[in-house]
Image 1: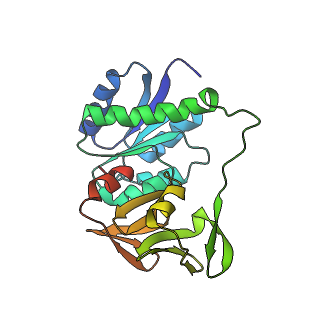
Image 2: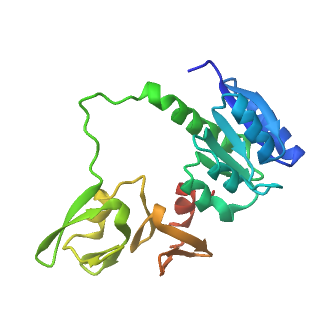
Length: 238
């Protein structure tokens, strides 16, 4: 890896661009290669330069940030910097490093950059040993006298239901004789998040968020007041 992380700023607001440039000046590991006011300018630069990290606005002329990112076959790491929080889910669906809501502080900016640095360095710094086995992508659930193989990606949400826990997947609903806490312990923390005392959801299956409600498929799930702040932080919205 080169000594510095090569960055590109894409934002049609000159003030926003200057703020990111100023913040970057406080981080020695970052080198700004160029700034662009629209996605087409950026695309031309990406064809000529090696870029490790993009700071990307969403609401831009010609082509918005989400659409632009979808056009890139092998995109660099991306940190969205925008005033529109309603696009956060789309951003994370595209594997963005972080989602900064304008105006954001230097402290919040540094947290996002640190995440990007970790991702960029990971292929070299954290290569697993050849003998290490990949983690299972599924669990076996005993319910109704049968044992079901359930893939984590298929789980929409888990709901506390008396002494049982209801596990709702794309294809079925299971009622294993397990406590809600036991289910929470076996679900991967990077995929599943608790947003209510009775609900754990699969972040990847969120359709949209409206007020204090999350919509998954056709199910409307409440966000508990005691969980809302941590839930939004895990989505990168706060």
